[in-house]
Length: 319
Image (spheres, rainbow, N blue to C red):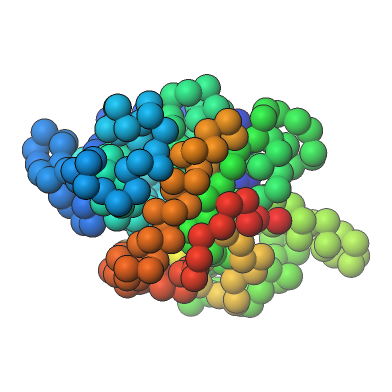
């Protein structure tokens, strides 16, 4: 998500940005592509720490624990969502591939998007992985007005996505681009980078002598979708792969459609505490390893997310 604090932007979610109080779901341990867990929630087969090629690059604390604790907001299909009581999607499968390189399990816990970065920096999580857009503001711990909120985080970039617009099937208001939203009511998840994109466009509308956008921000993306589906908003915005997935699946593909081109494409990153440089370096090496061995491509192909592929990981590549 492209979210202010992260699938979203995280101040305290890219997806481009999202914040809200959502009850914390149970921790799920995922260590293999797809569903590799047994009924207890543990992986059937865990990587051998002594044999994993990048195990020695991990901090000693994580080597000893055998686990990387991951904060996420699991309501962002196909990137991360809950199915049958398990957290599944692109990000969990990428994490599963990374675990084979690093020799430790990735343990996902779902909570509110806007609380991911603050929880990471408080030590609750080792990383946050939730379609979080890597931005300079998040790196520096700034909100959308430039106010310092915290120390910021480092990002290990692994995917790229832009903002997309989705509307009711049939596009009754004939929306063709973000510029067509001037004077219209638009639904979005609060705290995301795409909420910021709408705020930016609203200013552009008034500068051009048009009416500003009427932005309705919700605590979670499901509420925003419901608003568009009911006709209460003419459009919703989301990260491109998520918007495409919504249009493909909702009501068997009969509820929404994506219009126009994706805009403001930027990298998604795994967020890491700035003081944990060793973990950041290990994750960067692991992402590059799965890109090189083809596992990364297989994950994206599985979820139809090929348009977000990157050729190489980078640290803090966002602008």
